[in-house]
Image (cartoon, rainbow, N blue to C red; front, top):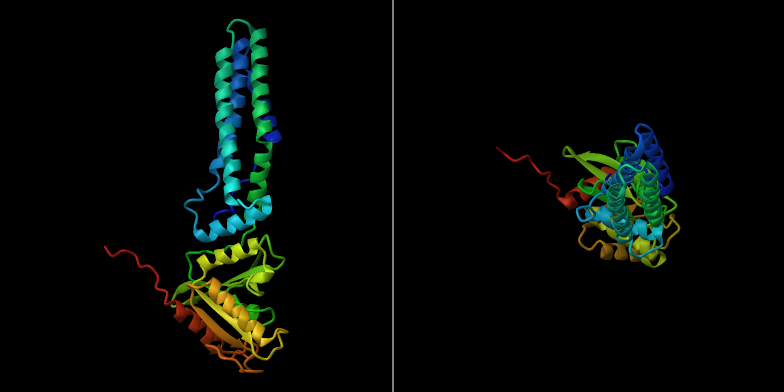
Length: 328
C-alpha cells in the first residue's frame, strides 16, 4: 500500500535540536572563523536536507491510483477539517519545500557574510544565521504537524489493491455478508479500520482460474442509505467505485436481519446508482428460510448451499482476463 512506508514526520523542535547539536560538534572540530562556517554549513544542510526528505517521501498524487486518491482525499478532509483534503496536504508540503530551500539559502548567505580574520564578529554572524533558520522553522511548525497527522491517518487505510480484480459486498447489516466473505476466502480474512468508521473493513482473498481476487466487506459504508452517510463517507464510497469490479448485493427475504425487504431493495437501487459502471449481482441469502425475492443467486451460507455458485456468478459477471506477458 502506497502510504504504509511513509516515515515519521519530525517536529520543528526536533529538527532544530538535531541541526544545532550537530553544528556544535562540527564547530568544536575547528577553530576561529572556520568553526563558525562549519556550524552554519552543517545546520543549513541538516535542516534543508531533512525537510526535503519529508516532502519527497510522499507520492506524486497526480500518479496515485484514483481509488487511493479519493480515499486519501476523504481521510484528509476529516483529519484537517478542511474540504480541500489532498490539496491542503499539498499546500503544507509546499511550505515545507520552501523552508528546505530557504534554510539552504540562509547557510550560503551567512557564510558569505563571515568576516575572515575576526572570530568574534564571525560568531555574531553565525548566531544571526541560526536565528533566521529558527524563524523559518517556526513558520512551518504547523505544516510539519499537519503532514505528520496526515501520515498517521493514511497509514491506517485498508490494504486494497486496486489492480487486483475485486468483489465488493453490500447490503444491510446481518444479511450474511461477513459470513460469506469468510466462507469463500482461502486465507484468514484481514480487518482494517477506515479512519471514518467504527467498524473494521474486511478484506479477504480467493483464487479463480489461477487469478488472485479480493473480496471486500465495508460495514459502515454500504450497509445503510446514502442520506445517513456524511459527505466524507460518500467520497469513500466513490473511491470504492474505482476499485470494485463487481458488487454482490445481499438481500434477506426472511426479514431476520431486522430490515424490511422494501428498505433493502431501496438500498440496492442506491448502490446500483452509485456504482453505475460496475456489474451488480443480487443475492438472496438465507434461502433456507425464504426465497421470496427476485435475485440472480439464491444461497444459504448457514447450510453452505449455493455459496460457490454465487462466487462463480460474481467472477463471471466481471469476465476478467489477466494480462499476459508480451510474446517475444
